Image (cartoon, rainbow, N blue to C red; front, side):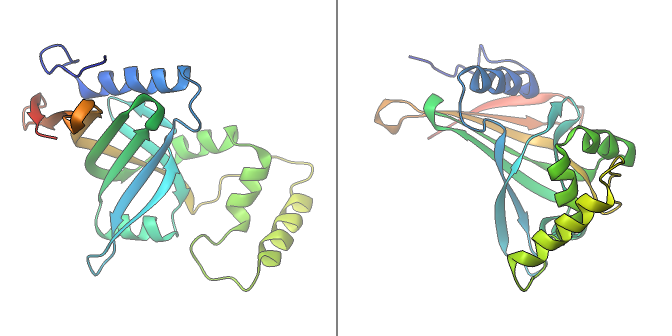
Length: 201
């Protein structure tokens, strides 16, 4: 049976996350890159939605969105957020908390170029989070854009790009018999090192 041992786990939580993430991919799990993103509204109400992890490295966890969406506006006001990954088939969960910043425009544009053409058009067509009268509004706008860009490359919209969550807390959870689960918490210290603690389930 798999266990989480704070004496044997990677000292760097990003390294341990990458091990688990690669194993989720290798296990052919559906959408292993899906993560719940939690933000806070201006009046203090928590709100969450699923987004996709597009990059993870020593600088943090990256996702992309419309900068005029509800979540982007919330992050402009309160640049702190939380992520949750849950891989049910592996009985594993990862919680990540930290500060969020925008990626550089060049980084966003470079990723935009790798997206399927339909998704590129969708980024232009959808006024994300705004009320629309009917789905046909989106479909008509997407059709018009497809015609407009039929013979040329689609540029990255100015109001579209990435966010990077730089973590200061990461918790790894592994299911165990009798609900005596393993919970290992990493906390970032002012000197840039991580402390590792075991939490009660």
